[in-house]
Amino acid sequence: MKQAVDAARSDLIQPGVLTAGVNLGNILLVTGTSVDGSPEGVSPGMAAALAERLGVEVGYRTYATPGEVADAAARGEWDIGLIAEDPARAEVIDFCDAYVEIEATYLVPAGSPLQSITDVDRPGVRIAVSERAAYDLYLSRALRHAELHRARDLPGALQLFVDEGLDALAGIKPALLENAANLPGSRVLAGNYTTVRQAIATRPGCGALNAFTRDFIADARQTGLIGELIERHGVAGKLKVVD
Image (tube, rainbow, N blue to C red; front, side, top):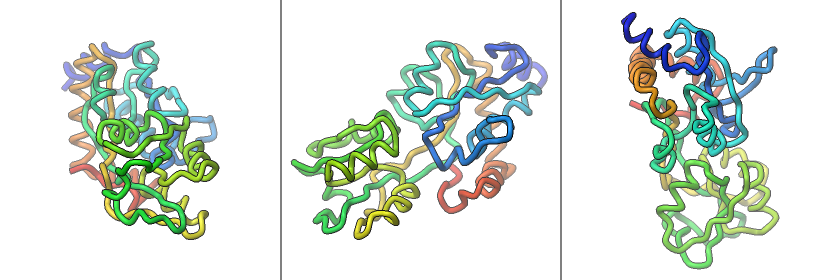
């Protein structure tokens, strides 16, 4: 165990500190801010627990969007990044394992003829989406007919959907349900077109840290740590622990 800890520590950018890149755009995983300004929530909690396992301090680098988290790896800004798995992101960072997953679906406006997820991928259908979110990356590969209209972040995608009178808003189901409560007559379509799997990644070349993190995630599932973090931060029923 000591050998694995020492090897993982040797991969850290700053000795004695695990620097975690955190996506502030996911409101289910980052749910608040501590007195000192650090992010709080399930993903910061996972980073803190991993740092404790390594016997080092945790430091946070925060970003407005998941795309910015991924981009920052090449600049050596973090040791671990907490964002969703995706093949495009895996070209520039090394994913360990997913720890929670979230259903992704569509919100449609009042009076929409779209009744199911399969109805959405038709010619002429315009979909608002948060640029470079995991579900944007997925839909960019999967859609054959519908057209994606991108905004920088989740609030921007919602605004685009409303202002431009688009046909659907793509997003994670819990957030869309909140949006629907403020848009009379709108509906969240049943089912999902993908499941967004939130994971921990490491910078390329950090093999020891990556292996240590994989073991940590496996233990976090087994001990119930992930479920405890979900309960503690008030997102029970919105996130599912990955088996």
